[in-house]
Length: 462
Image (cartoon, rainbow, N blue to C red; front, side):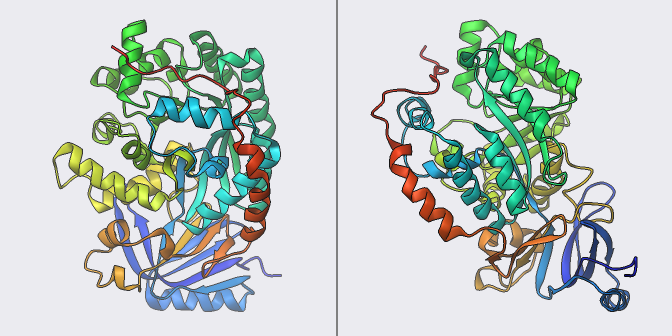
């Protein structure tokens, strides 16, 4: 067989490209050639593109996708979620966060089995693939089951096993063992992190030990911190430091760390984040903040000004009801306009930058995904903009951010493998998953035992 054989060729699309300043632009009538899971070329001169495609087809290309009328984007990254929590979608509605955790979510999670986690993860991956998500950062329990689902369905993932200090040293040890065991699994599609839950559930000694383990083993850290303003105020009142300052004094900020939410990040925290010796990123999941009626949102602009990338996220479907990163992109753009009082921030192109390269950077994968360019892994989605809700197109970036929907994603590709084509999932049997999960729900939802896996006590009661 010829060495020039391609696995996949996509022709006729409009492709989102980044220039050397990471500015977003578009090129029409492009051809993308993929070989061995890697983007080999992006040819944008029409005659050259057609000739290249024909030559590749003659050389025996594996698949040819005619994407005329569609836009090729880098696959979206869900930078913070709890995928198996789709099983809890809608069970804890219209509650403040303390009741949400203590009265519903943590009692239910005390029932979790590996089968529950696997089924929830499978359903979540189906939802994300259909919404154009090609990589997700997950922070949950029984994570070997999630890793197995990632292996079988073909998506990419950044996984961490959650632990609390209440579990004793065994919790931290399990998080480390998981991270070392699964690092590089699924043909390299799985990366891993240490995953302490948060500064209000993991004490300083455990955080310091985690930072030491991260440095020793070359692992990043993924945790919740300063999720909301109440947590920041409570930490200041009780301990005289903010949650971010706790991360600094325990050495977490000397590691590569992904901070989930950060709507309680204060101005006094910015120097600690700016001067950290580790690579710091923040994941924002705006829909959940609106549902919990939190008074502030992730300070995206302030973080941008100090060089901290902000990736887009959904959090778990128990708090968000959705794993739709497309919606997170739209809401981030709109909420930033509202909270800053500036209609020029975020622009649609800036929102697309957050959804692509910044999200890849947040999970430590900016050198391999997040852009459509030679040498990058072939994580690509094709978006159909022919629907009446996206026409006419005057500004393609604005159409993608403010008019398109996740249901407009027609094809999802990870590592050059087509996981969904023309809206048909190719690696997950959704009806079968829904049936099996439905059979397990009565036992999972039972709260009569009166137990909970943890207590939430991070509210300001002053």
